[in-house]
Amino acid sequence: MSLLNRLSTVIKAKISKFIDKHEDPRETLDYSYQKQLELLQNVKRGIADVVTAKKRLELQKAKLEANIEELNTQARDAVSVGRDDLARIALERKKDSMAQIDSLVAQISDLENEQAKLINTEKRLSAKIEAFRTKKETIKAQYSAAEAQVKITEAVTGISEEMADVGLSVQRADEKTEEMKARAQALDELIEAGTLKDVTSDETKVDEELRKIKSKDEVENELKILKEQIPTKKRVAEQEGETQEVQQ
Amino acid sequence: MIVRILGDSQYELESKYLDEINELDNCMVDHLNDDEVDEFKKCLSEMIRIVRDNGTPLDPTEIVASDVILPSPDITPKEAKKLFAQEGTISE
Image (cartoon, rainbow over all chains, first blue to last red):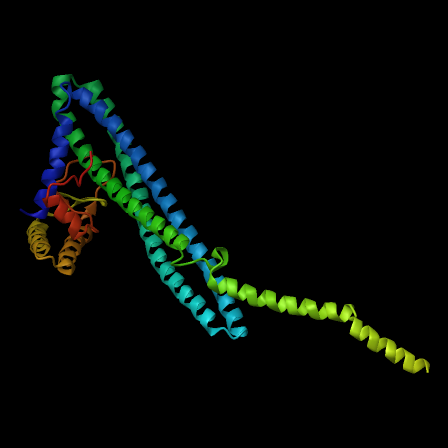
């Protein structure tokens, strides 16, 4: 069977199920209108979901970018104290983070496309619903139930096809959003588990060692200052000797 | 005839393009069966191009059923296969 036939069959099955639901065709009109409004809400919710997912990915991207800054600093600090091993770890992590950023950029643009498509869908559906509402009132005012049958079937068939189309778009967007959420979740877990460790907050090896080196330097410096300020007994004795020599 | 591209819009298209569309439809199915993704996509985008280039988009306030329904331009082979497998690709 051809793909197009298959597609038509699936959509027509949905439509006829919809039309056969009510005995009075005019009820079908109201029911359809109700469903259209619900669908429009679904589209709006879909847009909001896409935006939320996109924001989350953008936040992760910003976090990773901040990590890269930090890792650069740490690599430089490590090199300045002659610890190439630590610098290497920092640079490796930086590379991991950069690869993740690249994939996030692609996912964000994917969601942007999805958002644009849904906004178009919303516009188109809104216009159709408004047109349907007018048509619905006209049919109800001008025809008896029996006379209206053909007109109603026509209108409902047309709008139902649109609804099947929009429903499909919303479903695809939902699937994409869910997929992105799962990936974002996985990335959060990775960052947490340390595969892409945020070196500064997690007190990892590089950070800790650099901190130790730094604090060792600070201790030495402070000791030097203290030594200068507080004379030792030995130095006091020496100084006193010098004074006596001068007095003699 | 009226042609709908799912996720896009409806177009008014001269019937003379129907043969070409049917050929590309067969082309898609063949490549789908052989798992040739690139070829599948090629047939699909050619089909979409024919409608977009030669058709006139319908005013969105017109409520009319289509004669031909084309898949979304970004349908994946996986989604297309699902359609054949009769899984719920179309929601209510």
